[in-house]
Length: 190
Image (cartoon, rainbow, N blue to C red; front, side, top):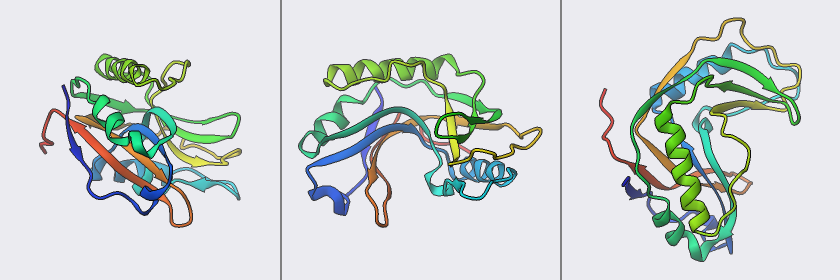
């Protein structure tokens, strides 16, 4: 079972009736810098909204709004077994629809696919919906990116995953992300 660590005091949004949550793989500082370097190699059209380096992550599951009163129960219920693994983000693309520029992993390690499935089971056990589409591990580099030009040969970003986070999207103005709980079995070693 993954160990969980509370992230500290609640955000100013803590008094609100609901929290907008998601589960994510969060990069180390070095991995975040490598991702930001990749984002800097793109040519962005006018109107593109690059993601700030501090907000770069790979979503495991979007949860959405939940009652604030359930936050502790949800955080406890999402502690699942975790096997550390390496993931390589090696394909730069602009996905259609809302036109998001991503750095995608062409192969998801089996251990991370298993983590994704265990978290889906935990979410269902908590009475929460789960996205029915297959998981496509990726990091969103920019939104409103129609017409963006990816580097011809992106440098793969190899990222060691030894944990995951339950994260709250804090509403604007001045919004951002707040880690509600971090889950890990392994201490980072460099």
